[in-house]
Length: 355
View 1 (cartoon, one colour):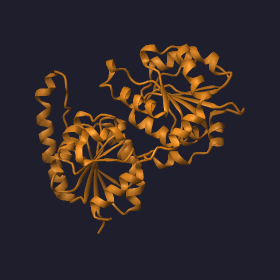
View 2 (cartoon, one colour; view 1 turned 180 degrees about the vertical axis):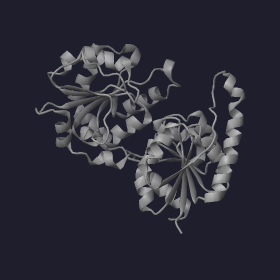
View 3 (spheres, one colour; view 1 turned 120 degrees about the vertical axis):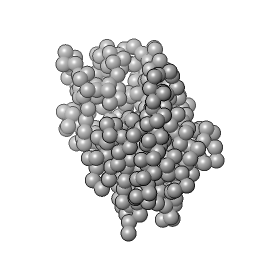
View 4 (cartoon, one colour; view 1 turned 45 degrees about the horizontal axis):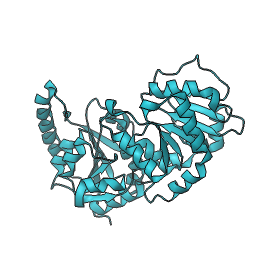
């Protein structure tokens, strides 16, 4: 009889993609894979398309740090989610539960407490509210940043972040062919996140005349953000790139990116020096600022704050990064947790009794 694992996490792609990165290893290890998420979250969209994953729906309310009338009703949704999770856990009897965070994970982790070993994973430099709650009910808390151990106590273990294995096996020549780059200029990849980033797009447009003599530039603009009026030889715009992304990464020399945890750790695993432009505190809880600052301290990346982002500051940063690219790559190569997939799998197997 197959051992069963219950995965959870959702609300954003960042709470789902590391779970997807674990799927090949879990399948190889012989697990029957179950996933708990919401009815209308991105986790359902992503996970229901995965073979070998059985998806279960529960109710979930958002836990907010600010006033909202929903703060009076959402706790009842969380309580409902706990009872729904208890029923699912009783039915499937998982050998281990793995939580990637997000508000849907809270009722699952509470319900699983003392019913099965619970492993939580925190991608950001400081734990989010959902994972701070979940940590109280978890047996182990895996962290992507070594510094995060001080926030999670004795349960913490430094693993790095699970990375989608296919990203590590790209074809650089295939990437150049896909993008239509036939010369030998290095490739600069610009990413603004799944929804794009207007500030990055604007600064890049102004910087292109100075960048294109040196680089070919591929720009992931975000849905609906491509600008056909910006047209140059050696400049390619895409809303997003699907299965060819591994090849695009393989042919890329440098990256300009936001500093979400998934992005920074994928670039670390791929050993790509980067200029990070973190989401400002006015638009977030500040986690990207902390992620980027950590990578800058380690010598893995340079940081340009959005408040001082212009075409000129972007060109200056990219020029400096390219001039020192070997130094950045050498620093990245020494990181002990550049790909956390194997380490997280070891902990899952140990908790399930397989090691």
